[in-house]
Length: 70
Image (cartoon, rainbow, N blue to C red; front, top):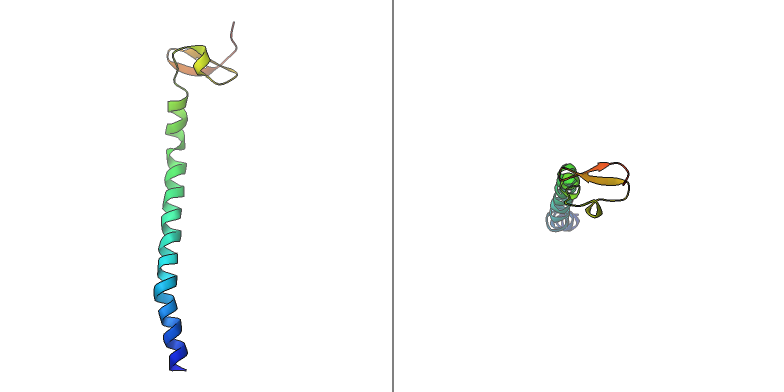
């Protein structure tokens, strides 16, 4: 019985702790990615000409804004 408890303790320490830390790191990275998304979108919508903007947007004062090309 003591051997089984020792094996479970070793597994908890050498498998459970690193796995928990891994899940924590993945969670932090996912949260960071979501929190930076609005900033990334703002950077992607800067332009110098209409061709820099995605479809349905035009370049106005250095920013892509919804509109149609004339």
